[in-house]
Image (cartoon, rainbow, N blue to C red; front, side, top):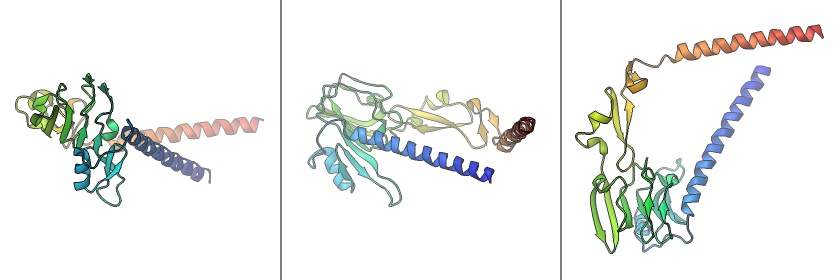
Amino acid sequence: MKALCSCMRFVALVLILNLFFQASYQLTELQVCNLCGGIILNSSAVGQFCFFSAGRIDGRCCLRNDTTNDPEHIIGLDLSNCSLTCVQDLQGASTAFMIDLSFNPIVNISDTAFQGFNKLNYMILPQNIDCPGSNTSWEKVEIKKGNRHCEGQRNMCNETGQLSMNCPENSLCAPFGPGFFECSCAENFRGYKCLREGEFPALQVFGSLAASTVVISVLLWATQRRKAKSL
């Protein structure tokens, strides 16, 4: 009975932690959508994108769920004319396809501000600000009406002369935002720099851990039982 109660407590703890992390993620999204007042105008670039993408406007965000079972996520973010001087953390909008930061007195954009924005395909920036990852990270860069338009994020894994030098042998390259990529071990390889071949010995590692836990639990139980008898 005690073992069952302990198991139930563990399951409850996992569920609580899961709900906490989901709430934190949703709160981060909500914060991004309310970085400045107002809502997306239907006549704006993001507003039109939202309309044709069958999205829903919430503050400065365009939200959409791809399936009925998936939660809504940000596909467009309009922070134009928000008096922003720097851009550091917009991770709550990492699923966005389009971001508008025009008409802001931006002085600096953090090098890692858009790291992980794999879906980002269109950006509008003040003219004096380069596209994230440098202009070479985009298929098309042009100046329109005093703003810089960055269109078509390039896949850095297709850039010649970089992949073999930055990704170790036995690893695969994957895009990780404008100007970024990440390396992951190929199938059947693992460990530091993907040098170890074969599957992770989960049974040996966790089996030994479970056995050690059982032994320690038995010893503690026996010790407590002796103390109880002596009393």
